[in-house]
Image (tube, rainbow, N blue to C red):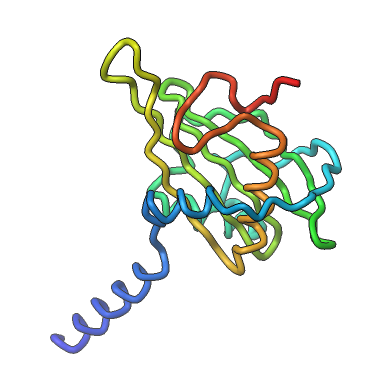
Length: 177
């Protein structure tokens, strides 16, 4: 019995090593990378809502991201339009998805295809003083050969939005021209 417990413990430990969110410092390092690449926007397409992740085999890589970030897909705070931006990079299609909490302003951005996924989760905290801006606690998660998905997400967010991973501004998902 003791051997079985040790084996179970070892399995849990090995699985937890693979399923972890990156530290805020590591995520900010990803965000600050200068490798912005040209991506081709192919338009807006319908995609699976975050609360439906796991119901189909195609959303398993995104469900793993949520697990790494300790987020629950069934949280009734999630809001989403149910649409993604389809982009083309390096002959691969990717989808950029955004969801947010109704009351907390926390947001997740995910770049994914059938094999790879990368996400940023931005937890917004209220300012301590009236003249301060809202602070951000950043975390990120990855699945598969995530390097290209990370580059796609960074490029999309930096070129098409006013999103910052160090501060929050209402409406920064949109870019003013």
